[in-house]
Image (tube, rainbow, N blue to C red):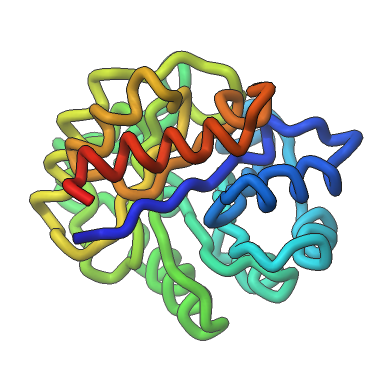
Amino acid sequence: MKSVRIAPSLLAADHGRLKDEVQRVEAGGADMLHVDVMDAHFVPNLAFGTDTVSTLRKLTKLPLDLHLMIMDPEKYVAAFADAGADSITFHAEAVANDYARKYKDRGWSLQLVCKDFYDRGRLDRTIETIRAKGKKCCVGINPDTAAEALEFIDRVDMVLAMTVWPGFGGQKFIDSVVPKIARLRKMSPTVDIEVDGGVDLTNVERAARAGANVIVAGTSVFHSPDAAGTIRELREIAGRAHGL
């Protein structure tokens, strides 16, 4: 049975009090910290860089769960690994061939009509660099990218199923992603499955019952008057869904 882990997302924290916010969720029982990196290209926003990751590494002993919402991840994973990340998530859409991805109103998705989704050289360099740095290798997919596009699921430690379109915090959980989580779990009983986006006490059970065991929660934790209580409840609810 996969263990349940709670990863508060620092995108929703008070960035003017980052040290206090990190200490608040660490004391509240967080298992890891989720750190979003955005390049204003893969997503229409900018957030966090290597300097911030280096600072966070000095502030906490919690694992840093890095989420690269950037194009060309193979060019940057080494720098983020050196800055202190413990796990690095790149997006499948970001290492796809141009003809295999389509930008819709809200973000990128892979097209199942394609015979070969990926730029194999870039995909391999990304994975191999993360592995060479001794970090956990993870891959993320956007809401409209099908689970079946992850033909290399056996090469990663974790899959991140986005339950909102990436780029901004505070969005509503997309329920239609839940069946995809179940398909991912069927594809691999051993990989960790992470969910990110709009996750709170009202929907975490559905995500966990489908197979998710790593729960990213930003607004629901950092905007809670009782962050520790919210972290505890998220873990308990997800744990029950897993039969723990």
